[in-house]
Image (cartoon, rainbow, N blue to C red):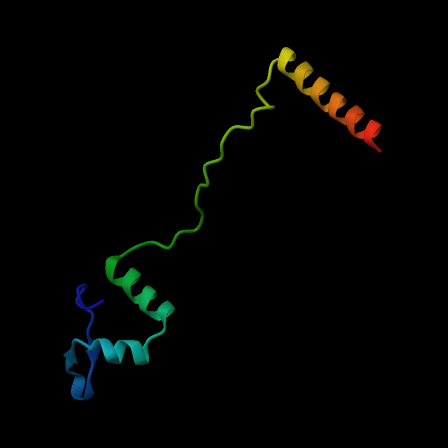
Amino acid sequence: MKQEGYKVRMAGGRRKKPTMKWMLENLTLGQAGLILRQMRDEEPKKSWVIPLTDRSFLGADQREIDELANTVFDETLRRIKRA
């Protein structure tokens, strides 16, 4: 905040750069973040994009679907035989 030129109003209308100790004692993390965003003219993020990897079974062709179905069927039979 000091690097951005943050100043506080003192008695008599004077402004001065606050010390780190003063900022730690008198500002919360949220207040400091808000002040920095306002000083930098940043817009708050309303949403963000989370990139997701493609699901392999959604783009599968018929042969791959058949293989997947056979694998699931074989695994189910194997577990039934164990029980």
